[in-house]
Image 1 (spheres, rainbow, N blue to C red):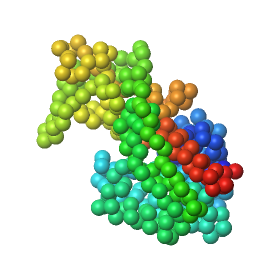
Image 2 (spheres, rainbow, N blue to C red):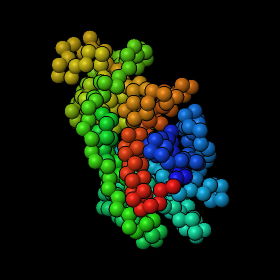
Image 3 (tube, rainbow, N blue to C red):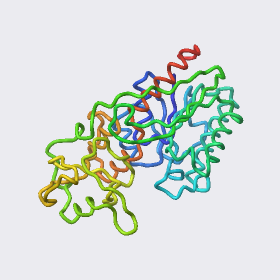
Image 4 (cartoon, one colour):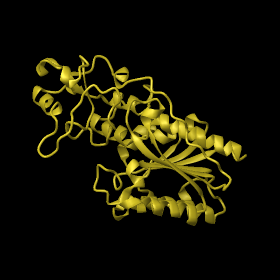
Length: 323
């Protein structure tokens, strides 16, 4: 079953589908650093460039299309401009690619799209209604949608994402994967002998352990069992109550007697990789920490991708369409 991956980043969706027996033959992303990381880890072709500028004829024939189309226009972390922002219109490019295949009598059997949780509620639900209308009424797909949390699929990270799964066959009866018991904590994934550069100064410790600054007040925590959502801006600033921090001693803030004695640090890129379900065999050498934080913050959690892919495969097998 041949797969084309759009907005592939470092291949979180791709890895899950490959692990489930799909054949990813072609991928695309416009971030050159993410493409470099992708090429270090996967054998299939990936094309660097704006998907709006790539002719349809250059995309090989495929059975399944997957993609985590840019989420910033819909994210609670952004301005939530949605389709008003240029990146938000990339969904329409996805629709154009599918329409082109339909016109060639090569309608894809399945479409799997991923985005932030807020996609369903953005603009009072009208954004998702538009997406659903295009996929179902204009392109003729049976559409299934749910919000999945990475922490429910073996990864100690709270990361809620919207998954839209579509089938060309109107008889498709898709069931989203069942939740799994979480048996690991963030601390189980930490590295040992971490370089000093990841540790915070006493001044930054005070910032991180405070309950917000200015007009923003929230409860600050470190050494969480389940990590906060990783985000693409992890490398840019130290934000109390938002990013993930751990200490060698493992104390909660209320347990710290002397802040100067607590060795507190940010997560390493490898720890971020683990929190996104990437195995340690995933190559990150040769890429700056700044770019790696961005890449893992933007990534799709592999564990979630894998169980969704297996459910898609089960549905296609039940329909007699798996090949």
